[in-house]
Length: 324
Image (cartoon, rainbow, N blue to C red; front, top):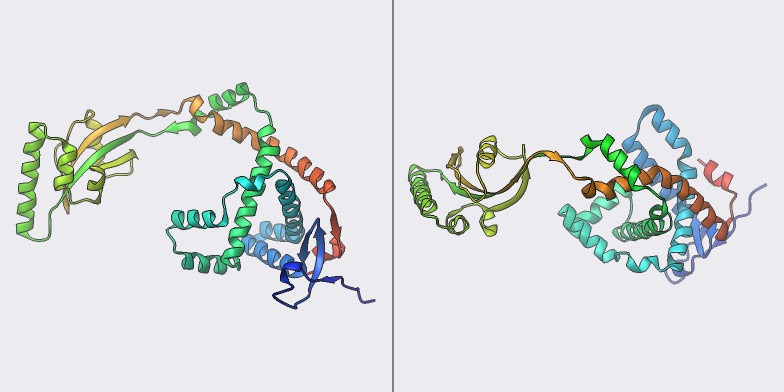
């Protein structure tokens, strides 16, 4: 016998469309439609195909529909709990999330919208909404579950003592650089040599190296007085690193010649290779030790919130997750 479908129209859509969608699940005052569920399943499939293959992929695909449905239900459940506790008040706005993404990825808004649609099949507004919801839920779980999982200082220190290789810090240094471009012609090269000689004379007289950088350097770093910040050993030219590590603070080294430039550097400071102190990494270790413990607590918390919520499967769950 043909199954009778319960068809509803979402109130927010009434003024915009007459399309009627099949409702699968009602979670408090939220609805999960077949269209929304299928879109989420397709996104989950796409993600799995990107990261897995072979038998591992086959196993994950078996549970993808059920996992997707559970996550959709839990999202609405937890968002309502977050609303009850005003958790969303401290979450960044969608505008702030967008600005952060654009800055961190050096993208324009139009490029980001194209990337989101191509990779996830979502509009930019949908993506930003989901990112904000995810942040709200993470904040809720942090406050209600994660931070309440106890980890003793003694346990954290024991882990630190047994895993010190994880907390090695490489040797690093901080320098000012003054770069003189050699140019492309013999006259430009001669001019560069003369400039270098003038600078070296000024250094010998005790003239501020930073002022010399501002006056003579052809590098963009002249805007910071040549200060390029802390650099881990192994990231710059060997000749620069060797010179930097042979200097004392505030000392200026001999000129370093490359194919294109003459380089003078002044050491600002250096640090030897070592182990980060326990107090520096204590919070990091505690959070790491909390993770496996918190998973069990998270599942109990989720189950308790599901029981509090009004979850109604309009279409039986077995039929939803079993449909191909």
